[in-house]
Amino acid sequence: MASEQGASCNERLLAAAKADDVDMLNEVFEEGDYDINFQDGLGNTALHYAAQYGSVDALDELLTVEGCDVDLQNRIMKQTPLHLACKNSDLDTRHYMVRSLLEAGADTSIKDKHGQRAYDLIPAADNDCRGFIREAEAQAAQLDDVADDDDDDVHSDDVASD
Image (cartoon, rainbow, N blue to C red; front, side, top):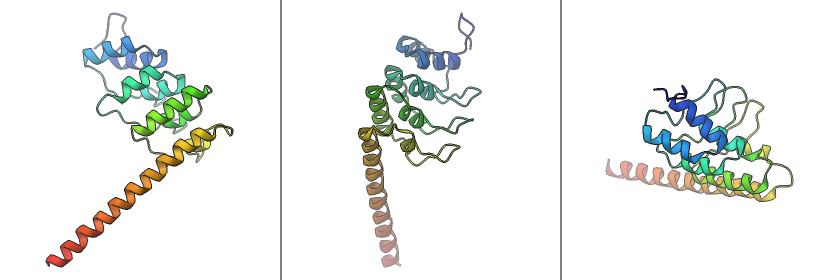
């Protein structure tokens, strides 16, 4: 469905993310005829553009939408929104976006076409941002350990009941 300007809701979603235009995002959300994970010809989603352009308000709005996939990789560089956020030149914006994406469950282990994880793209002097990712990785490892322990318990119960 095209708007009066001729742009589809998905195209407007991408434009709003680039421009950090929350009003336009909300208009698209209200119309309802959009795909939150729509990828353009380059494979970028609205979340990719919000991360790339430092659009923190748009990023916040996008992350509230059910079904928003924080781990989609774009086509050329195979980068996720987390990769792009880690490269943001503004320190405060980078920190905010990286933390927001991590809280939304971004996978820190995904590698781009050069074999780099998002962590590898953080400017060398930004130890705080590296710490955010290390902390998220440690929490994920703990959750995996707990899940593995639970699997063992279920298995031993199954064996005991046989």
